[in-house]
Amino acid sequence: ETKSTNSLTYSEGAKLPSTAPSWAIQASERLKKRREEGYKSSCNPPPNVKKVLLHSCCAPCSGAMVEEMCSSDKLDQVVVFFYNPNIHPRQEYEIRKEENKRFCEKLGIEFVDCDYDPENWYSRMKGMEFDPERGRRCTECFDMRMERCALYAHENGFDAIATTNATSRWKDANQVDDSGYRAAARYEGLKYWCQNWQSDEMTLRKYEISANERFYKQEYCGCSYSLRDSNDWRKANMIPKIKIGGDTAGLGDRYFSDPLVDAAEESQDVVDEFFSQANEIAETAGNDIMKRKEALKVYKDRRKTE
Picture 1: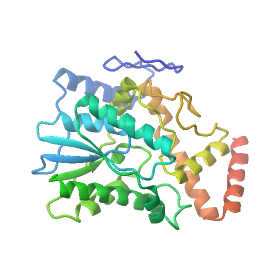
Picture 2: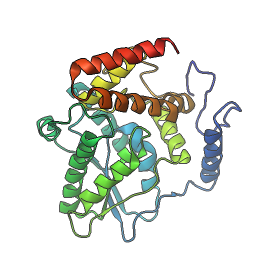
Picture 3: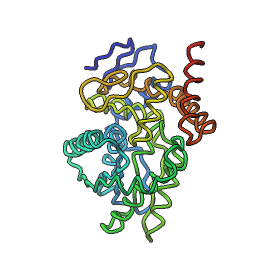
Picture 4: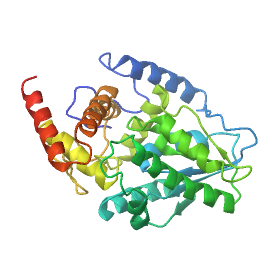
């Protein structure tokens, strides 16, 4: 049973209310049909791929992707690889890692816990501290994580790598995939598995699993710069700042609880507005802190008059 203050409530497998978004209703019907047919996986791994190393950024982004891969009769092994030195602070890192690990243990999937080396991450991101999300810094961040994933895959006999970053509306799928292809190309015979993991079906299923597991609802991408920019955006939009850990979130529920409500909080409109403002501030102020504060003040005043 799900709990929500929103009028749209949904339990897995139940018929959606007529007020639900059309994309969710259609995706739910397709998922229902798949359940009736034994939920055969719709994923399509690259040719001759039997062993996959799946880089995971967090449990919520992993759920549907792991389910698709593990229910495929084309694969022999799926292993989850956790390497995310970008996540800050350490408390947030441990929350995300431990939840991911518990989810894998529940499913009986091997979980590889890689080193937390934020010093190397900050060194690699030097000079890009004020780049907007989806900019150069994010490309370097994806590259760093996928390079480590590809190295482990090469050393341990995997046929392909993939990443749960490709499931998120907050990520540019092309940017994520480009990093995956570059990393895999370092090793002969290793492939990067590219697929549309952001389909309506996959998106609804991701939120279903997250609600059923009551996953921790993180409020920002993960790095300290994302935390800073997200709080700046919240301040400009008169939204409470992000809270790390605990049972209370800065905004909304701390845990996923209802797929429709959770999806609405990360709707394409919300995502697009965030990046529109981030890019506007980056173009106007760059790395000048005083100019950034002034740009945020202008944006806040603009919001008050809307």
